[in-house]
Image (cartoon, rainbow, N blue to C red):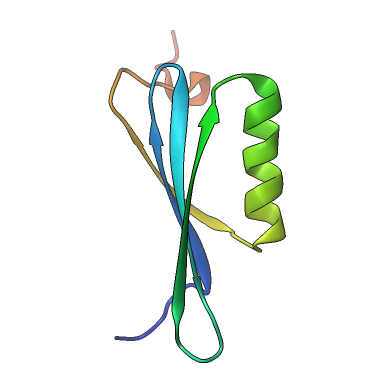
Length: 77
C-alpha cells in the first residue's frame, strides 16, 4: 500500500473531551501509533495542537458523536 501522508491524525470529538490517534510512518516504513485524550478546555486544545504540530501532522480527520456545525458552515440568512 502506498503511503499518502507521513503523519496524519483521526479525532473523535465528544462533549467534554476528544480522543486523537496520531499515525506517523517512519522512513523504514514502520507505522507508529499514539493515542491521547484531551479535554475540550482551551488549554488542552492548545496542547493537542502543539502535539500535532511537533509531529508535523497536517492532515486531520474529525468524527463527532453529537451535533457539530462550525459557524462557517451555517447557512447564510
